[in-house]
Image 1 (tube, rainbow, N blue to C red):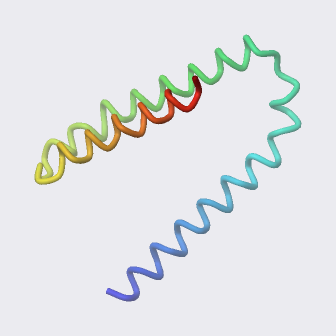
Image 2 (cartoon, one colour):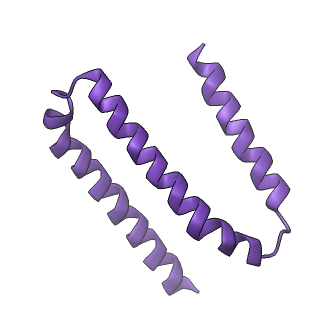
Length: 88
């Protein structure tokens, strides 16, 4: 059990580090892209994320126990509402 914790911590830390490094390396390139092109690229990326979620993650989620499904849904909606309200 303890080994699993350290493995998860190391994996999460490595993912955070790689994400941060990727942002720092790509910022000079991305900052030169005009707004409309960047918007199109981000929408393409979001579409790919929705596709993966719909085709791979949702079928797997349906097989799992639904003990906390409503709580997770409510939490996700609450986070979305807080994000939208913070922008106004």
